[in-house]
Length: 114
Length: 111
Image (cartoon, rainbow over all chains, first blue to last red; front, top):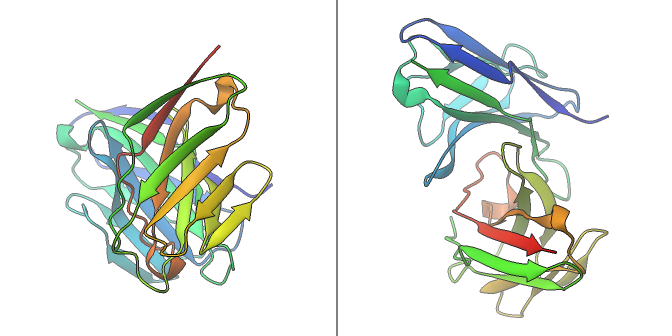
């Protein structure tokens, strides 16, 4: 089954404690992205990657890092989380060669920073 | 990137056809129109994409007039499980590396 898998689904952490949210896709997609969703602000892109070792900033990259060492994985790293990073996070993947440009999203990670 | 405008919310009853219209006045020649559905606390799910005229799949139909400045998502015979937020997007050239989600339309289906 084609899917994007995020872990963990829920996470509560304290300010300043480094954390990583993992994202893996099994569709051999080139494109992967991270979004955060906040009430009243909708979905905003954090970072995206167009292939292995190719990453770029989205609209709200401050406080986040990513890496793309292999095609299937695109972890989101918060080096020093702060309460304003409390949010619902989604990873997405897609293939630019597809005729119908469908992006597949993970189930989300709800992060609370206290 | 083309900006989209759609109603904030809509109400319907089970069994009715629902039409959600989106305006995208500055759509470019190579832009596609794409619709996603999102249930609470779940990731968005692709519904349908089109370029012109009409596109239909097992879930919905998408109507696009000749000037392409608007589009209408049509959901036939909705059920309670269709209650969700529906987003209209116009990705540049259909590209999915950067999707701009607006506020979407919250569709509430009642019994």
